[in-house]
Length: 326
Image 1: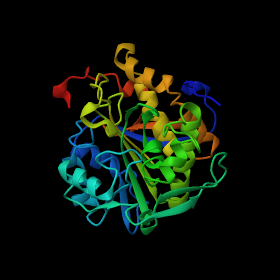
Image 2: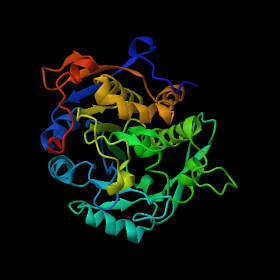
Image 3: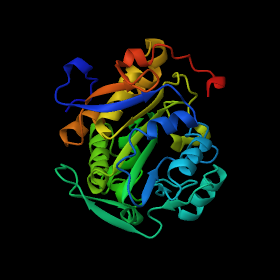
Image 4: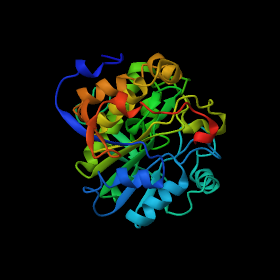
């Protein structure tokens, strides 16, 4: 049960392709998307974190609007209500928050508005099934568009958390992941067990969509806090890095973590400390154990002739984070 960081040269198995661009812009997002879009067919859902009211760090709406208008005009953004009481606890509150945050250029489907659906968890040790927002099964394909950042309990939030927590419905599924039965503490499950439960939930969604699922992680405005903390999020001190895209959820989250670890110690310190103290890296090792993908990958530089690079090459010219670099 490894929750330690495993250096790349100590990993085993096959490699998946992960694309990388330093271009943090609407054009950069489009460039990354075009590398992993061939399997998105039929009715396409886009799972992203729409954020708490006025959250400063979420993926910029104009980037997503540009992507939707140019490539996915019939797609819908999907979300679920929160487990905790707040601005996204009920569907009515959630819709108001979505409006405040500017997600008005595209339909947003709150998946658990009309109830739940149980999807099987194959090979899990905690679950045989996970309860998702019912409307998830209305879609043929899923684009997992993730703002990669820290998380107060998960250590970090990548593609795995985006769908592992984000597709589970707000009352049953999220309670299964976070709470011990009979406990007065709704956050009674933490550290390695939380990471494993999150990954099993994520696996249910990955298996459901099979080959019709793609992943993009945006490594920008990476606070140690999740977007669920909104304006209360801790200040960003980690440099912006770029955008990753892959067809492999395990590979893209491993690559995202590797890019952070490849930063100078002073730049990575806070985010790495958050990942390690919460045992967040167990997400990565457990995804591999569940057969969700590879923890090795070929990193392809979209800015330089699609040559293979190492994480240290990708972060060589990062600029220390300042408000103006947003």
